[in-house]
Amino acid sequence: MCGIVGVVSNAPVNQLLYDALLLLQHRGQDAAGIVTQQERKFFMHKARGMVRDVFRTRNMRSLPGNCGLGQVRYPTAGNAFSDEEAQPFYVNAPFGIVLVHNGNLTNAKALKTELFSSGHRHTNTDSDSEVLLNVLAYEIEETTRGLPLRARDVFEAVRKVHLRIQGSYAVIAMIAGHGVLAFRDPFGIRPLCMGRGDGTVLLASESVALEGTAHKFERNIDPGEAVFIDLQGKVHAQQCAAQPVLNPCIFEFVYLARPDSVMDGISVYQARLNLGKALAQRVISTVPPNEIDVVIPIPESSRPSAAQLAQLLGLPYREGFVKNRYVGRTFIMPGQSVRKKSVRQKLNAIASEFKGRNVLLVDDSIVRGTTSREIVQMAREAGARKVYMASAAPPVRFPNVYGIDMPTAEELVAHNRSVEQIRELIGCDALIYQDVEGMKKAIGSLNPAIKNFDASCFDGIYVTGNITADDIARLNANRVSTDESADETSRLALPNHED
Image 1 (cartoon, helix red, strand yellow):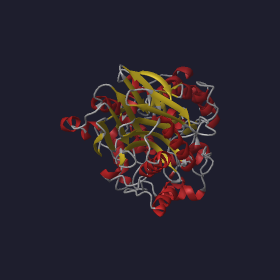
Image 2 (cartoon, helix red, strand yellow):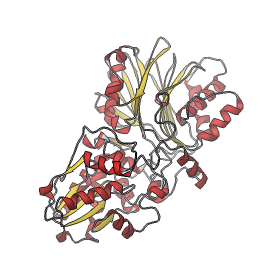
Image 3 (tube, one colour):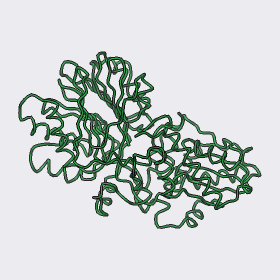
Image 4 (cartoon, helix red, strand yellow):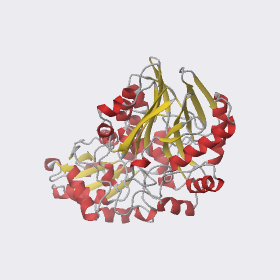
C-alpha cells in the first residue's frame, strides 16, 4: 500500500503537499517524495524515510510551482533498499510526465518484457509503478502523435492503459505544461478521492488528507474513471473502462485506513464499530461472557471493535498495553528471536489490568501469528488467569496480490490450519475469528451500493479474475520481504492507529 496526493492550485503547493503526506503517513513509511511544476519544469525531491525526515527547509524551498504530486511508500515489490524506487517516477517523453501509484500490477513482468522487446521504452528499476508510467507515456504518445494534448486524448490513452495493465492501481500523474491526471482501476480496489479548497483541487488516497488541509471532500474517483485537471483548475472527467465495478479492498476498512477517513461512502471508524458488533455474537457462541472479566484491545486499530464488543457484552473495557511510539521501524529483522524482542520494545503490559483476570484480547487481524503468540505470553506473564483472543477479521488464509505485503501462503498462520490448530500455536485458551460473510455484511451495510469487496486474503477470490497459482508464485518471488522480514511486528509501528 502507498499514499498518494496531487494538487492544482493558484498558489504554491509545496507546503500543501507536505501537509497532505503527513496525513497519509500511515500508508507508507519507507520512502517519501514530492514533485512540483513551474514553467513546464519539474522539481523533485525523494528519499527513503518518513516525511518529516525526508523534507527539510532547504528541500521545500527547492520545490516551487502551483501544481504537484506526492507519495509515501510502503513497498510490496521491487528493491525496498533503493532510493531510486522512491516515487514519483519521471519520463521525459511525451511532454514530460511524472507519476505516483498506489497498488500492484499483476502483469508487470510481461509488460516490462514487452516494453523492452518493442524498443519503445526502458525501465531503470524493478518497480511496477515505473512500468505503469511507461505504459501510460506510450499510450499518450500513440494517441497524440506529436499534436498538442487535449483532454480527450488523455482519456483515450487511459482507456488503452486499462486494456493493457492488470491488478490494482490508483494513479496520479502530472503532464508538463498541461495539468494533473488521476485514474483508478476498473475494480476500484485501491481508494482515491477529490476535494476542493480556495482556488485548489486536491486528489488523495483518503478523505482525511482533504479535511486535514482545509479542503472540502467532493467525491470519490469512480472505478475505471479518469479525471484531468488543467492548469487553470478546470476539471474534466470521463469513464474509461468498459465494465467498471466497485470492489474496494476490505482490508482498508479492517486495518489500513485511518479511522477518521470516509472511503467509497463508508466511515472507516463506523466499519470497525460494526465489526465489533458482529464479533460480539461470535464471542458469545464460543466463550460465555460471564467467563470474561475484561476486554483489552491490542493497539491500535482494534480499539473501536473492542470497545463496541465490550459494550454489547456488558464487560469492562480497559487499556492493558502501552505502545512505545518512538521505537523505529523493525520491518527488516535478522531473525525470529529479534522479532520477539521487538514486540516487547513496542508494547508493554499494565500488570494490574491482567493479574488474576480472564482477559479477552481483541486484535484487528492475525497474519503470521508470531506477534499474537508473544502478546498472549505477555498477558500470562502479567498475571492473567486465562487469555482469550478475538480477531475482528476472519482468518488470513491467502496471499494478497493487490498492493498489501501479505506473506506467502505457507507463512500465514491460518493457511491449511483449523482454528483449533491456530489456537494451539498462539497459545490462548480460546480463539474467536470473525467470519467472512459477517465481515462483508458489517462493512457493506454502510453503503448498499457496494455489492462486493476484494477480500482475497480471506476468501481466496481475486476480483480481477486473472490470478493463477503461477502469478502468485511470481509475485511472491519479487516481494520486498522475506521470511526474515515482515510480520505483525512491523504493523505495530504503523502510526495510523494512533490518530
